[in-house]
Length: 131
Length: 39
Image (cartoon, rainbow over all chains, first blue to last red; front, side, top):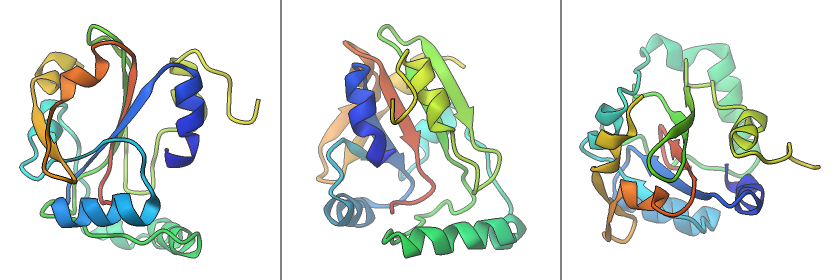
């Protein structure tokens, strides 16, 4: 999502990251990745429970697709800061409009699943990346 | 999905500053990215 922030800004949208780690992990993430948008810490799962985020299994974390994804991220210079207390929690991407309307919701089906950026931009009425 | 409950949640950022999540979509749409981990 970080590299698509200019696309979101052109669409008039903000971006907020919500993670499962602690303040130390979040601060390292912001510093090392030069994150320019708010990064919130859901250490007690209040936000995760509000949207009923899914969970995965320990077996799913050693699937080849997950391991290869981790290697790709590492090769791209991204280092995982820490999982916090809920390593089995899955991710999600929501687009919420003014007034609280949920315009788009992608609940990750496993740890290698992420919202397609084209779908997120389409929910904002923006052109696909690169156009 | 009902964003009302989510909007009432307040979380701290990496500097310990509290934010009410619903405030982020008060004036503009927002992309909320729930991460499994930082990084």
